[in-house]
Image (cartoon, rainbow, N blue to C red; front, top):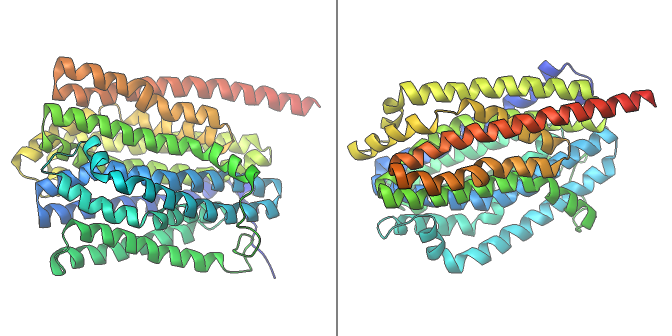
Length: 454
């Protein structure tokens, strides 16, 4: 039997390789973001502005749940890429099995830990007595399907690292198509309300995960499901969690920041301000997902060539990634500054919600062109196994800079102070990331000179 080994990662021209791996990831991530936007559109059209605000409260909690799956999936896929570059194929196989076991365990534990305190958690995330019923009904179903969410996202990350970016994209599209079919059916035909949106999400992910299992069941693949790979190994768990801790902290910090933002927004602008932030966040996240697709495509290329000590190729990927990400986030900035109202109207928002969302849009994207480069730099450190640096960059923008600004600026400028804190923290964190990257590049080049001298 012939097994597929992705050796092209170390030989094919970087431009073509980055396009080959990033484009499917970008398409999949954008499509995934679009179907989140479609969820909001269906909710807004079918259930009203208060339901939109309820989903805005529930979304960061749902993202926190998914962050655990991302921690395992991204960590495992990074380690797999490096091991494939080193030619350690049997160890990569065991990482696949351990990833599935970890996702099952953490998925169940997270659900059992959160269900008894669901209302309290949602109040903490900014729910009011008006929006709590919507947020509760939505998150109850999401939590019950949490293990499926973990397995789906984790398996997709490994598919990309195993040299199958198109298969990972196809799985994402399958989930999106099923979700978009079920949304209107559950909301408008079955009259399940916001619970119908949640059921559509979980069922769609379950269908896609079944397809992933089929792909990983083929014995002709280098990475495939077989006996003896599911028993947890401490060394594998430690490596995956150490590297995956960076995206986990990034997502967790993002959830905590939304928690703080929602509470400040509720204090200074009410439920409609939270709804406005929810809409702007979903639109901005559409562009963030394009960058995320780009860095997901970069990750196996950087990891493989780093493992093979081909630093010239590593730097080329980094340079292309920064240029591409900056162009993407610049586009978001231009859209938010010049055509915010037409974008907001797509969600069926009322006059008050539209007014608040348009003003929020102007502030949120003011320094957004810098965000793309920072994301690429953080992913670069993660891909070469420098977890501590990646973790630091994950928390600087959101916790080290944004949290103090959220505490101070609203006292002086009210609701505008909440919006203003975001571009200021984006600017400061970019400077920190650029300085760390410059130092790291100099260090790598010094080490490379030492290797050559030996």
